[in-house]
Length: 130
Image (cartoon, rainbow, N blue to C red; front, side, top):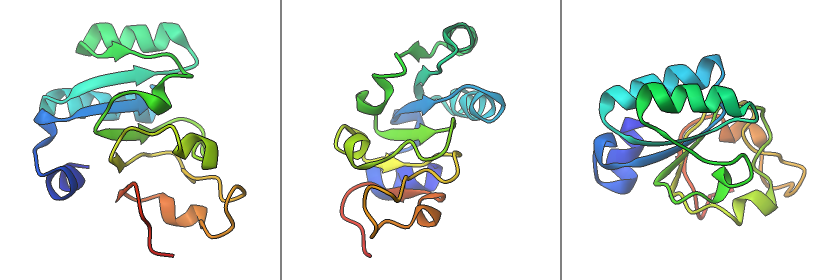
């Protein structure tokens, strides 16, 4: 994620806002690392109490589960269930970089040209080579 921020956004993580969807075991670990790096954090989880605990511990801002996809963020990190990014969700994105831990991140059923296996690694959103 740090490499993506530097190459795509031309700035360090400490100057980025990162939207993290899901604050379970993996999401919490990511939030802690990004908090230590000085990033601005937006967190969301279907378990509102879990999101609130993480926000209280790190200073993150809680965003609704429905709002996290369109949150004003530089980087979107899905760390919940896989397949959260379909054609409809991709149209809502405001982030320039997708870098998450959900596998597969994309739902290839919406567009057969998208191979969900290709979305499990960090890559910028936008025009893709297929």
